[in-house]
Amino acid sequence: MEQQDADTLIAEEVSAAGSFHPDGVNTPRFLKGFPLSVWNATIKLQRAIMILCGIALTGLVFTQVITRYFFSMSLFEIEELATFSAVFLYFFGISHGAWERGHISASLVELILPKGRPQLAVEVFASLLTVLLSAWMTVWTWDYLEFVIRRGTVSLETGIPMSWVVAVIPFCMALMTLYFLIECGMRIQALLTGKALS
Image (tube, rainbow, N blue to C red):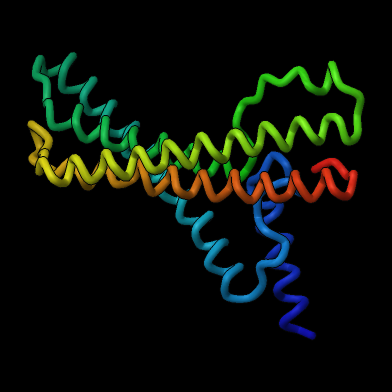
């Protein structure tokens, strides 16, 4: 009984923590125990990486401004590292945004169609299309990573293997596809039951 209460508490914490849509985030309701802990850890890791990359990006840009305008020198290594930090920040941001359902949407469905099943049906269609496009892009990014590894590309100034930087793209795209797939399943369930997602 205590374990069940603890699992419920964790699920409620994940559904609410840092989300603009407390009951609508893409955390499957069936997750319990260890799988839910792994899920929570993945979300927390994404947030930690975004915070660290944001701090690093700010510090690197600030350092570049100081060295360029006060010491009349430009450190190209800083520009590369700032770019790499931005790539990590952006891609972890899109995966976390997909989990949170925080992506911008320009939908007129709510204005044109009556509430209920017609709106839900269009949302399911849009969600399926999103999953398919996201999955296709994920496959494409894995191919791109394979190409970068095969070429053995390194960055010009720092000599960092570009595969280390590019690897974040398919990883985050795969996470985003997973979150969109879960959302799609929730929308299909909402269509079948006639209850809109919160």
